[in-house]
Amino acid sequence: MSEKPYVLRVAELIYFKIIEIKKQNPEINNMQAFEIFMSTKEYDFVSSGEFHDKWFLELKNNKFIDKITGKKITNETLKLLEVQKDSMVKLLMKIPKLYYTKSHFPLEISQRAFDHLWRVCESYEMWCKETKQENLIKLNILD
Image (cartoon, rainbow, N blue to C red; front, side, top):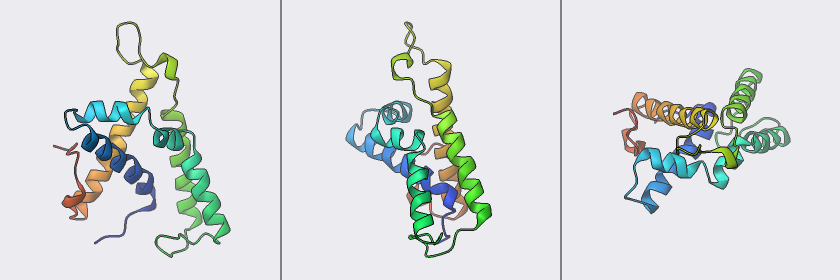
């Protein structure tokens, strides 16, 4: 089994939370599960930057040795994770009172967040396929 790139750690959190939502609501489709995810504490944790902030603090306190892999995280990887954090904060911006217009269509900012989450989950599934771990694919976004 291939080692998961660090940048997929947040994708895995998102992906498995959406799977959990679908298990709890078997009648819903992926799009509806994504919309429900956008109202969860996990979404707030990622979209606020708190996920990355907590991880960065843990790394700093552990001399930049990742607790899961036991490997030192390079400065280049840290910079990439900072870029990932910034994009999550910007693209997943949440304005709850403005999520839908009167016609019930998502506003552009909500659509942008939805699209970003979809791409994050697509990336996770692509990695699963590339590393021959198809058993991890549950949403079948790529199909």
